[in-house]
Length: 203
Image (cartoon, rainbow, N blue to C red; front, side, top):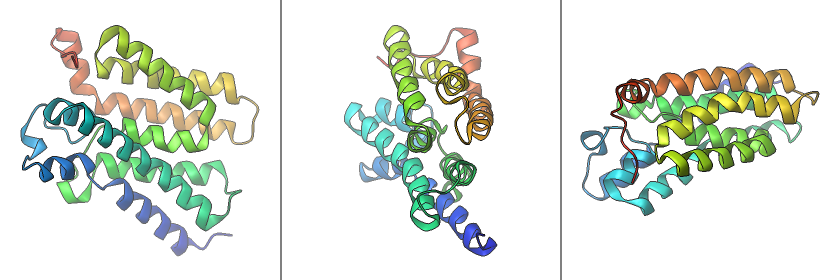
């Protein structure tokens, strides 16, 4: 049985880890407040637009690493056989930290990269297929929001196809559906721009 205070400490740690604003910090190192440029978002896409491909890719990797490392923390402290539901809960705290960071008045990124890091650790096969789908859609449209939204909407289907019947399947499926809704919510402005035909291509 996990002591409630011990588990609460892990949840807080995961949130704080997720709340490290890499896009904001890297832009600051260049003398730029990224919140005042481009879309105003601190995530990888806006970093790509404001600082260039190299820095945008770095922010994406670091933001994904936050989610992956949060789940690794659960495995290290709770044992390698920790249940999926506990790993998912801890991962969600990291995603919440990225999207609502305490340090930036709870205005963070959209959560795609951090969500990728969380599920890459928990369910690697459907997650890697989702990454492939993302790249294909992005190459066809050159619009990151379209690739992200379509991928998260397809993700529960991938989990059903590749994880059905396995231990923790129901938790994985429910979490993927909930997070798909959450990612769509964080992209609500992008959806409005898409409907108006105003969403910009990355290049």
